[in-house]
Image 1 (cartoon, rainbow, N blue to C red):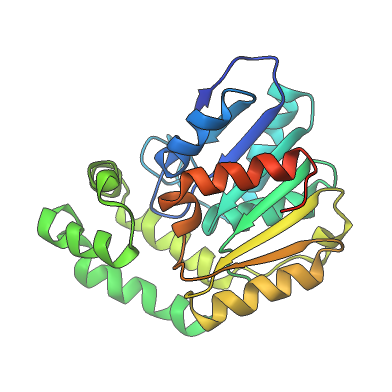
Image 2 (tube, helix red, strand yellow; image 1 turned 30 degrees about the vertical axis):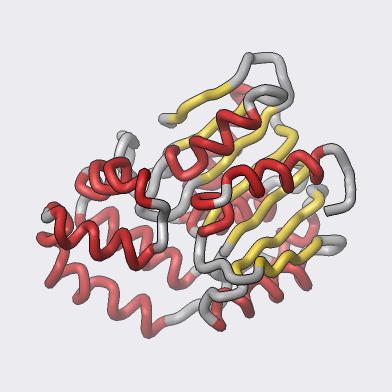
Length: 250
């Protein structure tokens, strides 16, 4: 597994799992700030630029991350955060290993499947995937995602590095993911974040996750769109994370 690390070894560990089509830079500002007090690891999910492995499934990504934690960190870490596809992988990790972490930060994770979206992904990318390497088209996509402008070069480079089949595979997996009942057996204190301006399906998913995970807390972020919390508001994301990890109200 490919990953980036911040902070000194020996400190308590935080893993942050990026969104689909993004990469480790999803959390780079947060990682730099958190590395003052923690050892932060930013894995690259399968099928993404920088990974040597094709994407197969959310379940397989979760299993590999659990094996990585077993090998490097003795079977559990302090905290795991995940955005969108990364949030789905995190939920799957909670379902597969109940004590994989003590805190789980789940941001904008879809758990209401859409067979229509799944069916449309392959024909849509079959017709437009070739445009991804054109900067003008990439800029249009980038603006639609509402990611802060200084991350465009990272986005463009890594989007160009994702194969058509991998892009289709993880987008289809994202569209069909369902929360496993076993996730409710996890030991982690779960915090669910969703933007107040996200789609109805995403808002419903956040409520479903909150209700399914005993003791979880739901945060609907006013005025925010999909992924904006960790991508565009790293300082607020870090401050919220630090409050959670210090067991303070937030």
